[in-house]
Length: 179
Image (cartoon, rainbow, N blue to C red):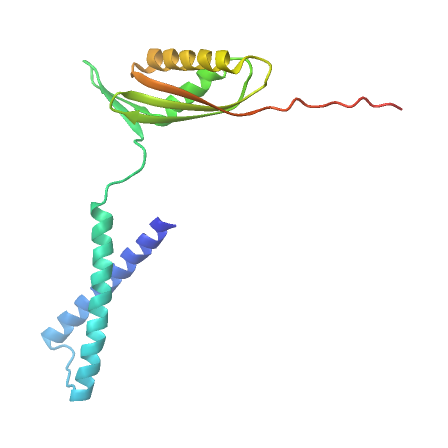
């Protein structure tokens, strides 16, 4: 929503500056003659003051948008090899994490989140367990498996693998049907 509003403000700003520029060129070149009375001059002065204030606010907003840092997550991880550059997207690493953690029995509804830190990748796995096996043992195996799999496949060091167990899945209850 904010991007749409910023684009609309940028459009209005560009349109306003364009119209004001055209009017200034026409007035200064004498293409449009003007003669104002004292009362008309006050109205034009007041309207010009309001328009200038609005354009100043729009200018400040557009300036802020142009210099602010993007707070979003890095979309790829760049590596340099002797043959050239490699870019691995964060989505690829998240899918590798999901693939590695889905190999373990008892894990369901998996979700992965990857953050890129100076020390390496910080991976968080969210899962629902079946409740049939030990949660500490299962999560330890998942952490080790994801850590080794991601480092082996990507060559990027993994600093931390966290596993968040969101819930225990409910086993479906079947009622026998008697006729």
